Length: 206
Length: 355
Ligand code: SF4
Ligand code: SF4
Image (cartoon, rainbow over all chains, first blue to last red; front, top):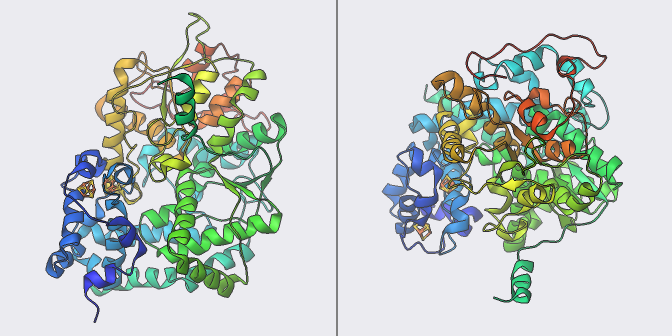
């Protein structure tokens, strides 16, 4: 069976993300996640560069890899052309392939993300959708959002949108034919399998 | 460096922006949170500037938020992107203009990945064919929608009804501009001015009479962080990052903030409400917030469009302080009317933040 490092090397984001890290810490200095969390992209780059299997496995099971905000500020600044944000993407991918994401609280949050963003895409063709957003889950939306939700049809009509309508326009209904193409792509390219994996792996650890 | 030398160097920071015939790729976040801005863009580019722009009903999400929250494989995003390009091919257009900065980064990244790893392009072609029967070819020109407004900023100035000038004092309005990270930090050569001198918004502001504020955290991320916002318990991350920006810009007393990224615009608006309600802290004058505009709203105000027809009543931070400074005549009652002029009540007032 392929080692974890070998598996990482099949992900083009890993190949693009790690050229040769000189441990300068520039990425950590620019990183918004490093300012907020106990998180250090320099250490991420260093760990995968060292290639120690046990350390990589510990990373895949940790909260650490889930802190990055994928702003990719590190890509602009690394003097050696590395991108810790891309390395993180490859680690998150492998953590879900191996099921190690269920070992950490932050990793298990993938279930919430899948049920929100993933299910929205399959149901509506949008990754976020007005009908699914309320101020209980999203109190930051504020009272203006409640007012918008109470008067959605007339406000959107005033703004020239085509809410739930056929044809083009803002917040139009995406047709079943188009949704069907989207879902078939999800099946063909492994997204459906990933979704099932997230649901099932989570339950098997509950 | 002499002037010619400077012009040569600056030329390297410019990018090609097609002059006409655009395929418009919509943003999920903007359609939901700033629904008037997408319509305003179509109006400015189509009816006002007279360009040909196509709004395709068949497009879907680009999967950007899912991709950067890592719930789907990269192959999925590549193939959805390929389908969007296939739709563009069907409609006969060659200039692809996504309205979302995350999407702009996604499209640019997938094209670069196909160039660096040609076997992934072959795989995407096969997967798209197998799933949908479609084929695709790449756009000739791929730019963000804010690039189009930037390109036509002088044309907009010629048609301007208002300038970004304080009518009372005659001085330029002081503006904070925020550019989404994925506009030029991932692929600096793809943004006007690159990652070092991004001028897509400052160019508009200065052309229309305003003054750009340079403050310490100007280029700091808004903190969206994808899963860091989507999951409720992680939202301290975006909130803290945006607060860092507010604290840094506050001493410079901005008249308004403008952004070109859907998530950033939303956070810069809504976190002011949250910080006010949680901590009693407000960043504008006299207990109000600092108005936060999309670049279409800024262009629309300059062109004399009605703020309530552009959807500015859907901001949580009130925009009236800015309208008053510019000298725009607006009807307060119309703000809260429905499509047929009917009364639809008003949003509740926040406890702390004045609106
Ligand atoms: S900036 Fe680049 S070289 Fe420096 S520590 Fe980070 S990844 Fe390594
Ligand atoms: S992409 Fe991740 S590691 Fe890189 S700067 Fe942003 S938050 Fe930090």
